[in-house]
Length: 225
Ligand code: CDP
Image 1 (cartoon, rainbow, N blue to C red):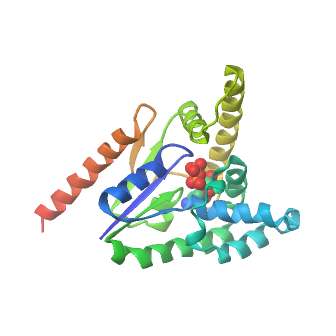
Image 2: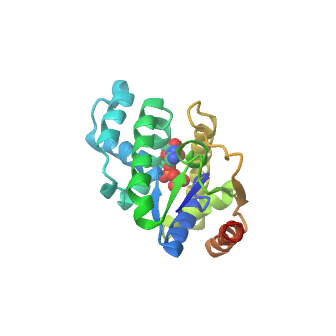
């Protein structure tokens, strides 16, 4: 039974890699960022007095999160991501969501023969004993372009596109900075992670590189049995 931990910066390709690997091996996959995004979305939608109660309310909503609610496309906005990154600094909230992630692994590991989690602290905190750890990154310009492409907007003027790209770069840089500098579970590669820069790689290239690493080590283990 394999546990695979994938961490990395926003729009680095970690989510697509996790999905592709899960499909290839038939493993269960959890995009852990969606847990933080769901709580952030609930805070926005329920519009309670969040100014004074942000930590309390985020913990309350985190306890109520169901895995079946995490597929929704509206969770992907940068507004939700910004709030997700802010509440992700709360140790109490992380504790609640960490338990949910471990629960996901306990439920699915045997059932699917393997689990893949992607996020920011998977290799360091959630699955410190993972069989494989990957840390995915790319240049900020490339990552912002990818995020813009995901939004599927058709621009009338080139300048509108440039403006939106610039705004996205600023937002994503701020989020990366907060994720890297927070005290609790900051975004850092685990010591034993394979670090991969995907700036010049397609999703297919990345899958090939990672599959080679996994298959290579699996073969060595099988030979040594
Ligand atoms: O898709 P993208 O990489 O832009 O973001 P995400 O994975 O959906 O995560 C949104 C935010 O949740 C991140 O910026 C982190 O602050 C937080 N997060 C975290 O702290 N720990 C995780 N394991 C996953 C996400």
